[in-house]
Length: 358
Image 1: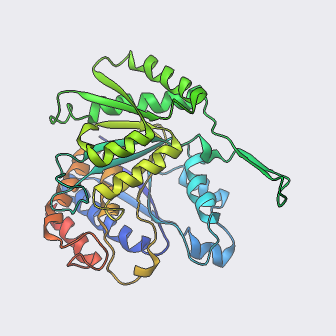
Image 2: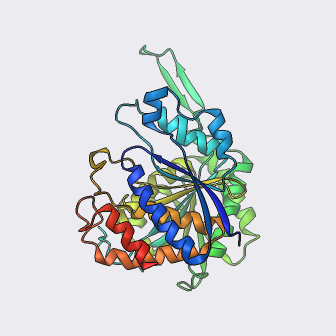
Image 3: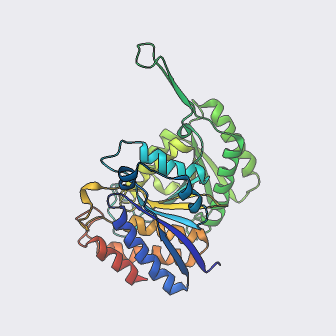
């Protein structure tokens, strides 16, 4: 295992700096326990910089970020910046330029975290969604014709290459082998489920299903399933225990992971990673900037702390990453709620509790 990692910190906007501060506190505690050196470098990127300079992500900064082992993000979004400028100019630009072709979203319900699903607990809600992160509708291929007239036509294309599909599915099979329920000792088999809409998107899913079968033949120990995306939404509510590892395309992944997040306690506890297995990956809490809570020391930092755990595990420090997850599991039963200002503790105190549990 590599013992030293260089991490770029992007605190961003709103409550992003507050939750990232607690994430770094826990990372430092884990680094001390497991003798890991973390070199952290702050970058001023986000709404405030854009309003001050007009810059979103300068090419020079992008080149610097390519030299890091990983990027640790707080949140991006500013009430005084037009929607889309920061999202496209910073988040999507980083994902595409750094070829972070996997979006990894663990769906894990921690002890004593309130779940809106009746009779479902940590045993039932414990799976992972792998979302293809480089293609589909999010690439922005399309345009408008005769804009502003009654004859206006809007076109946006869902486009995937064989290579994009193949590398996403191969990552998913490898992940299922290593992190599936059987591998973790909590199931009788590792299962990878492809989620799509093959009865409507016939050409697209002719490709996805064919490559799924081709690669699946190389992994006889991974059981394969297929679910339509609408049925998947139903199953995530009615029977989340049926899932192990799920793989899907970009837009469907964006939608179902938000649904999954509420079942694990909400966006305040959901963490995600934008992964380039051969390059620089970026890890972040999913909850956004929460501007109404900015500066009040009242926001839940557990999603950011969980993202830090994901980062260490992905980099190769799996023992440290798992220890942070264990520390989160020790902390959640002490909290009154996962909601901002209702936790029974401040943002800082939650970070202290997780760090102490390490």
